[in-house]
Length: 460
Ligand code: F0G
Image (tube, rainbow, N blue to C red; front, side, top):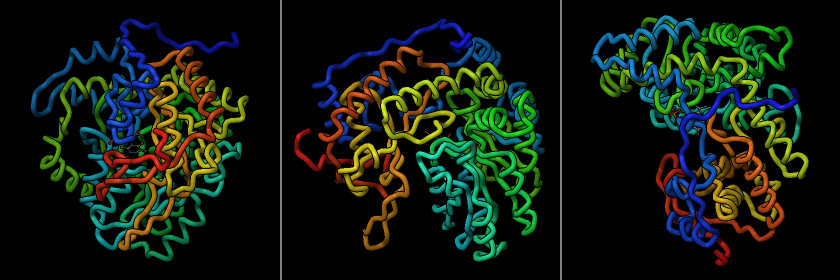
């Protein structure tokens, strides 16, 4: 059959509230035009993130009941550790309450004030954790990754030449480790090829620099490798994932993505000294190393979820949903990152709203228009999230101005995506009326979560 169906039936439902346009404008105003302040119940289709927002399977709910809540050495910890080791093959496993906790302890134990950490593209929390301890987070995405319209299989790849140049310029002794983020969330959810992971490893080997994978969407990346890279067709996804991890010395993970859980993360590594230092800070910040900030039941859910994420039929369905929306946008001529990513469709707000300059935040204009039009909650990945400000308050815009429509896992059905496409089409039709924004209040770090905006035109 041509139709790819959801490989599950729905056993439990959650109502969606429909507000009218006037009500939505009022809600947005009281949220200071920042969708992070909206109540979730006021969003009709919530695509703010694919993180922790998925639906659990019957097996996960059943596993949850098996949770062993012992403080130390629980059965749930053993099952969690076994699942993580089966996939990553790493010697040391540490649960954390989510991905950023693993990043923060990694940064605190390994990154010093004059250090540089290269990555294909740092996620915002990874960058913030490195900068918080005084390090410099450098993005070395390949040029293909910046060409929004280019149809290429692995636009998340690291630029190997620039990586080597960065190492030579910085000095290997000032690079505590190098990261690769799979898939590359910030750069449009694009995959990284196995060849690129291997090449990164061999450059790092030359300079004796450890290699850390940011593995949040490792299963989606494994599926892309299966579909697009020569020699991997027909291989079980778990084998592809194992090969990816085999090139790394350590990994950070947010299980809220490809752990198919609502909370949780982990850090894995092979080096005993890294493990010892990580463990000591973990106890201080998260909890005893066999639960690391999680309940026993969370560990159970993740042990099952990691394996379900590697199920081939699940990945076929998952990617079909993202492509379904992507193809509709293509037909309508609406600019978005091509090909579509593994977990999200990224609209190109620069091309969508060319009349709004980057420092008037076209991404915020588009995000707010999507909410007003159809109650769709999306998120800006542009100059608000990634723009820089120097000591004199001068702002530099981000390289790309994107709006991400992230797909929660196993949550929305085809009619939701049809509705979504209609909303985007309506916003596209009236795009000339969308205004830019200015920031009226902002914190020092991760400003996108809590800053306040005001529309530049007074229409709203
Ligand atoms: N790395 C990547 C690539 C991520 O996408 C995220 C989270 C993290 C690290 C941090 O993990 O949230 O468990 O602390 N991304 C979410 C998102 C928040 O919406 O893309 P966390």
